[in-house]
Length: 140
Image: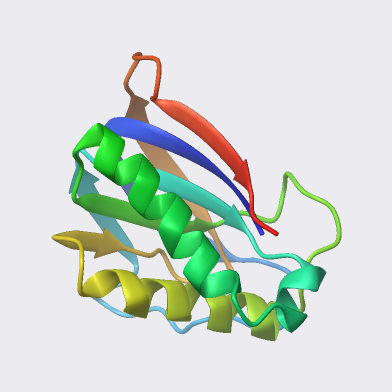
């Protein structure tokens, strides 16, 4: 698993078109668009090797907690982002992984936003410009 995070003033999305993935979430009034103020936005790539790593969720949560604790932020965006990285997991596992990460974070964070899986999104964000505003991690 890999992610790139941005500490932002705000994040907004609108789901615009289905991606080529056979796996997708249905759109409804609550997930077609969304926004969050002062979030850390995590662009997450779920990789093939994650499918056999029993500790992958705990490792991911630990890294997210380290970043959000340093930044003193309680708003999180989890965005599936397959465009940056190598050998991806199956789409089925990718969706399951994102949902599991979201479930584990719900208890600890004020607001979590997860745009629907399997859709192209129009994104708007304003990234902050401090030393920890952009962080990447490879989790293995």
